[in-house]
Length: 102
Image (cartoon, rainbow, N blue to C red; front, side, top):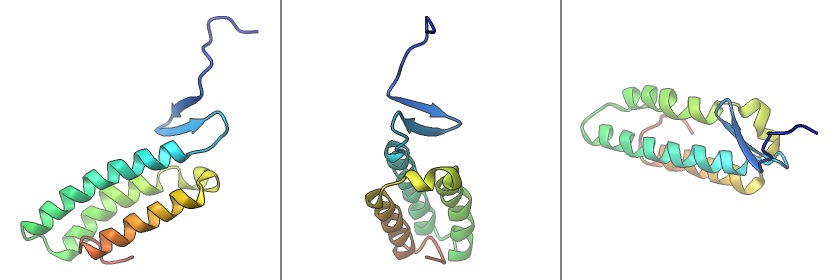
């Protein structure tokens, strides 16, 4: 047995939160909170006159890249509920007019 090693229920590794049961729900919640804050920034830019094309470039840069980070490795561990929240967030982004694609 290793001495001096603390046992934890959740750890952040390379920007991804993992639980001891390999569920990534806390990671998905964290990313959605971060993306919601960024969506607010995009709405401010939209209100200041940025075109939809420019907004979409920024959207792809600051939101889609964050959602896609570690997706290939973590997507199989995301619950259907969290998946629904992610798709809801993307629909909301499209409805707000900050993204050209849904």
